[in-house]
Image 1 (cartoon, rainbow, N blue to C red):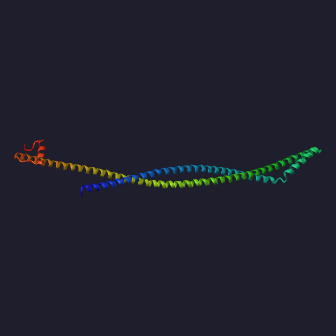
Image 2: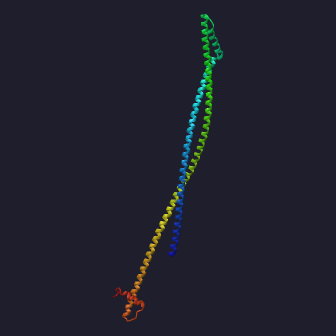
Image 3: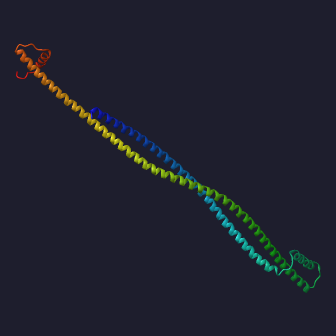
Length: 292
C-alpha cells in the first residue's frame, strides 16, 4: 500500500477516535451533571422527610398528652363513681331508720321548742321535753346530713357528666390529631419510597459514570498511542528523506567528481569542454581533485 494511502487511513482512524473521545466526554459531563442534580433532589427529599417527621413527632406528643389527660379524667370519674356508690350505701342504710322529711323534722323541733318557751311545766315534764327537743335536733341533723350527702352525690354526678363531656372533647381532639399524624406518616412513607428510588438511580448512575470514565480513558490512551505512532512515523519519514537526500548528494558529488576528472583529461588532450564539464571543473577548483 502506498505511503500516502496508509497515512490517509491512519488520519481517518485518528479522527474517528478523536470524535468518539469528544462524544464520550460530553456523555460523561451529562452523567455527572445528572448525578449532581440527583444528589440535590435527594438532599431536598431528606429535608422534607426530617420536617415531616418533626411535625409528626410534635403531633404525637400532643396525642400522648391528651391520652394522659383522658386517663386522669377516667381515674377521676372512677373515683367519683366509687364515692357516689359509698355514699349511696350509707344514705340507703341511714334512710331506712328515718321516715320523716326535713320540713317535718324542722316543724316537729319548732313545735317542741315553742312548748318549752310558752308552757308552764313542772320540772319533770320540762326535763322530758328538753330530752325530746335534743332527740328532735339529732333527728334534724341526721336528716340534714343525709340531704347533704345526697347533694354531694348530685354534685359528683354533675362532675361526672362534666368529665364525660371533657373526655368526649379530648377524644375528638385526639381523633383529629391522629388523622393529622397519619397524613404525616403517609407523606413520610411516600418520601422515603421516592428517596429510595432516587438512591437506586444514583447507584446505577455511579456505575454508569465509572464505565463512561473508563471508556473515555481508553479512548484517550488510544489517542496518545495514535499520536505516538504518528510522531514515530513522521520521524521515520524524515530520516528516510534525509538518508535519500544524503545518497542523492553523494551520487551527485561522485558524478561531479567524475565529470571534473574527465574535463581535466580533455584539457590535457587539448579538447574543447562542454558547459557541464566546464561547470564541474570550476566547482572542483575549490578543492583538490582526485589524483592531483
